[in-house]
Image: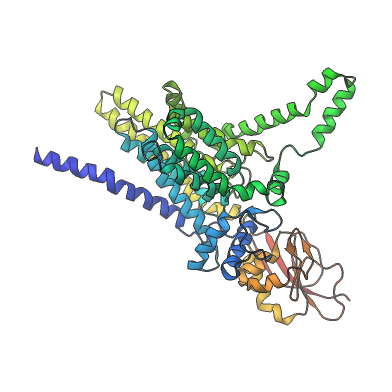
Length: 554
């Protein structure tokens, strides 16, 4: 009997201590391993984010010279929410200006989401027996998720915003017994709002869902709710006051699915055909088009091909070889949803509404389905998948009277899931880097190194803009003193807030070559200009990216 008690004690300690440690270590390994090298290069938004963070760290201003922006950083005129910039500045304080430091906040946020998955699973399924195995399965689905992993290994603001939203939701769930957590939850949601655009729609929706489902808790702690609401309202006031400024409105206007003129022209033509009557104006109203577009865009995120086969078409958002779930997750997701709906509880309904609320911001935009704009759903869908796997195994074990079946089924699930996860990881750290090197704008670092090495040998240097944002890569990889860049802010021509000249470098190809001395010119793959080839770099598919030529007007 004593031996049995010792065995039970060891098992309990393993589940309560060693299991969480294992989960965190596995999540950390997959998110930090070769973080500065995989993906193979910084895409231009990461470089801009990293250099702006460096500028804040060194001068207290962004590279345009704006002191400690609160609402948004101008960046290249697209006004990104400020949260990730300050997180990256902290990272760069410890690790310097490099690819690893820029991506570290996102990776840490990904690890944090795994930890919060553990805590949220315990809260939502607190009445389930033997829920430790459910917690493990839910965590593993997030750790190995192609969707979660993809965005936690690059400098995506959405990853950090998803962590803050997830933290806010967990604090809401435990606030029923710890009322001060309402204040902490408000702070977490505010941080999410200051980090990513989609959170500005998602957070009100998730709070509304909580209010409808847990009205009894709100009545009980109404004083704390009022205090938390006031705190949140005060903290987001700077955003509200600038709601019509480009800092807030520009991104929505740029991505909105409702700013296109063609549908309005089509609607007016249909009205004319119908005689432009009162009835035709009602039937052919733009709001019907907006509603149809919104529903189509929103529910495109439930397309099986997107969910389980190909994922997002953007190669920075997906490997293109797997969906945001593994194919094996289709059954688990269906089973998980079935059991949640079959015996609906407030917390299980909240889990489903969480996922749906995260689809709404993307439904308002173009280019759907969009894995990045729906990232605030994490880890709700994966938690449902984990619950589905757990239910499948549990039901089989209940009806399986043959010992072989009881051992075989869980082992089969484990082996199958391991196969899909291993296949994805092998591809992600391997061939995906070759396929997607163009999308990650591989070659900029090498090009900047070549230009910097030869910079003093030429009076004029021209760098193509055909691959986007060359000035930022030049500032980033050379760690140019931001004060020098700020001094040039009002002196040089710009395009969408990007400098077109710095010292003897022009970012853009010349209309006319200098006639006296030869210039160094960096060409993109589609640029055509005659000159003596000095150097070139190819992507991992052996396609030319940059070519350096020496030329003058003869």
